[in-house]
Length: 229
Image 1: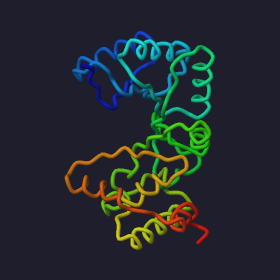
Image 2: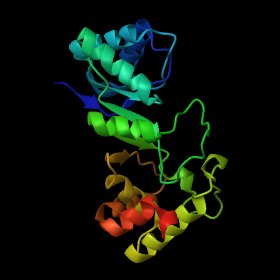
Image 3: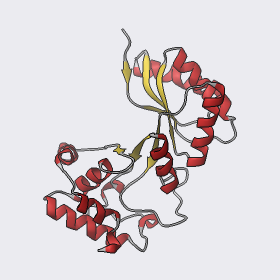
């Protein structure tokens, strides 16, 4: 009987030998036969995309992996990878996992080695109907905790307006800012799947409560364009 778990990531160079070795180690460690989603966790520009995608393709054909995803890639690199997959009839990345939250990073902000989603990436996902998964969506609690400050990379000229719009919508919905951030992502175009992380049952209940929120078109517009109100 085939078993699987979702997801698992690799955090090494993307040479074929390393991808195959890490996959086998993961299968043994997880005690499963198949990994549902196997990530190229960081872009490796020193290894040809043909080699990387060829290794992933072999794993899929061998039944060790069902789908492959990318993480911390720029839009143009995803486009290159997609072209390589089409040209050589190889498996293609089905999703992109990227740093993303409601607040916009200031222009030129760096999170190295992480890569934040930008308009180019969102447009790529929209045009290719690629799923995007957002990590660090709540910025380690900064939206709701007084003891957590927003990172400097998010303290831009429109940050105060965004936070005020988030506060207003939260009050209107009798919800927490965290819940509104999640609901906003689900109403996003393209839709964004936030990666949830909790350390207490209360946090889990709060996160799940976001599923009951329904944002109006007006609320979405105010969140998207806070400086216009």
